[in-house]
Length: 389
Image (cartoon, rainbow, N blue to C red; front, side):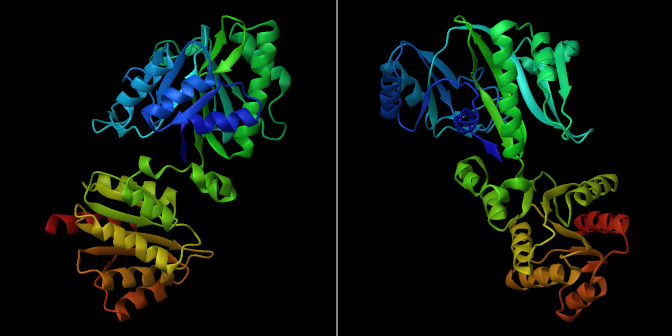
């Protein structure tokens, strides 16, 4: 789950990370009032969309009066901001963040993320932050400092201090940066985050450290532990299909092919996508069902796949085990197929708990499916079915 910049800053501020004072606005008038209320002589107006590269795309403006803040907000609100991360269609701006401007002397990059190769939290930091950090990191990877955190001991203060020293910080600034790292790590662990990126972490002309921009992602699989985060989920930033999938607790990703794929496990899904590719096919949808999914949730997912006119064949691959049984998935398939008027080739591969019961249920309910003997056979049959459609 992606958080907007203002949401991430509010969360990190509670942990003690220094951020500029700011106010969210959804109209030009509110932006004008927000700047006047914040006080100061300069403000930054920032489009709130889930995408990086806003500055280059005109989504961040420095203004010198509250009236100018309102005008900048008015120009952004309702427009579609196109960045390198949004694609050509861009994202509609429905909110802006009005923030007090800072006198920036230096920009640093600091991020906490999951190092998936090690299964641990790692900090990445560079003495050169701001726009173009990706290009700079590619051109000079030696300038990126990395600190891997041992989960058994947490972030060791001396390790944090060593990292900030490599960033060219000393004295009070080094102490402030090390303290901010501790706060970021605590927020990361307690929020079940997968990324907290501060770019830039600014050193002001007055010598203070302040997080000017924050990107934060919460692990979708852990959101159930944080009911307080539900209000942070912005439906305007996701498609109607993703909203529907979220409502039924399904993991859904829209893709560009023509084979709708439902699987019981993300690892299995990745394997099936590779197999489809190997046999010359392309997935239209990636849909992963939870181990505790009900037949009604399965049915909702199948209905979604059938509703996508690009989908010319369905591929359902399930490994029954634990709570999720193959006959539960079969019941969901049968419910959806009987409710819809659209019928397309459906290939099913069951294995594990209640495999035979699942196959028997589909046969007894006269649901027209083709059973596969193994994963490769399932992929081959799905690609062949699309060729015949």
